[in-house]
Structure formats: C-alpha cells, structure tokens
Image (cartoon, rainbow, N blue to C red; front, side):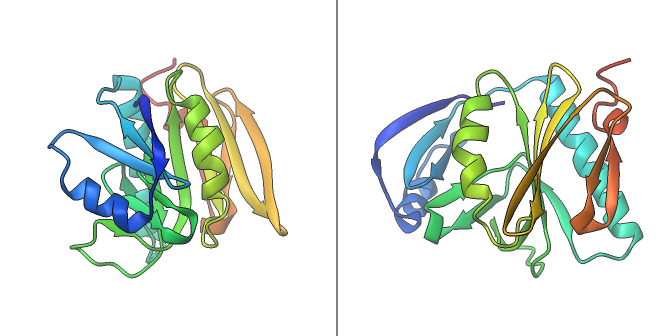
Length: 192
C-alpha cells in the first residue's frame, strides 16, 4: 500500500532514472506521464497476502505449462520512455527475455494493482490509462483489499473491455495466458 506526494515538474524517464539512483534506501518513486510521485512506505497484511496469492498462483500455473512468462512483484519496474512511465505494479507478468540482472521489465502482459483508499484514485486514474497504452499488455487487474472485488481490463479489439467481479465464487479469466484464477485463491486467508 502506498500514498503519493506529487511533484509539480515533469521529467523524462532518463531524468527519473538518474533521480531514482540517488534516493535513500527505503524510499520509492514512480514516474507517471512524466510526473514524479513519491510513494510513501507502509502496507497492510491484506495487501501483502493478496500480492503473494496472485504471484504464487500465476507462477505455479505458468511453470506447469512451460511458459516463458514469469510473475514478479513490486520491486521491479515497468519502464516506457514514450509514455513517461516508470512504475512499480504490485504484480506483473512479463514475457520478455529473462535477464537476472534486470531492474526493469520489457514485455509486461498482465499488470496488477492492489488498491487501498490511499492509492485507488492514483492506480486507476493515473496508472490505468498509461498501462493500457503499453502494446504488450493484455490484462490489467485492479484488486480491492477490503472486499473481494476486482476490476479487470482485458484487450478487446483495438481497446480494452472492463469486467467487474464481486464475491469469492467468481473466476478471473486471463485469456492471454490461457488460465484462470479463482477469487477464493486470490483472497485466501482474508475472507471466510
């Protein structure tokens, strides 16, 4: 979970990467449309459980089918200079070449943001439109923490179609990966 402090000046991704290289440990920043945002530290157990549940389920399914795609969590960034974007999704599935030394991902297919009251507007309103402009992105999930609800953006024709799921009996279809996740496994340990 993060909250944001906005800086007024815009910058390029290269400028952002230079700034980011000098920030103190424990401090994290994002660049959204050329605007610098400081992410405040902090998070809840619910936030972490959801991230781990999603990443774990994706990892086991992708490995089981021999996919070259891999899920990563919030410490690797997506960098898209043409969008002025350097962001840290909570979970990302990347299908590009694997480079163990990489700090940024090149071919994100699925992006997941776990929402909190402090991040909801920023994640959906600022990150969402930028994420939808990344050519390799096929699915974007906005996952609520306090209740089993997910908003899924999936590629449909030249744009994205939005589906809203509520309740533990729902199934998340990730057609681009050829798999599903149940809401029950995403929210495991949080709701009875």
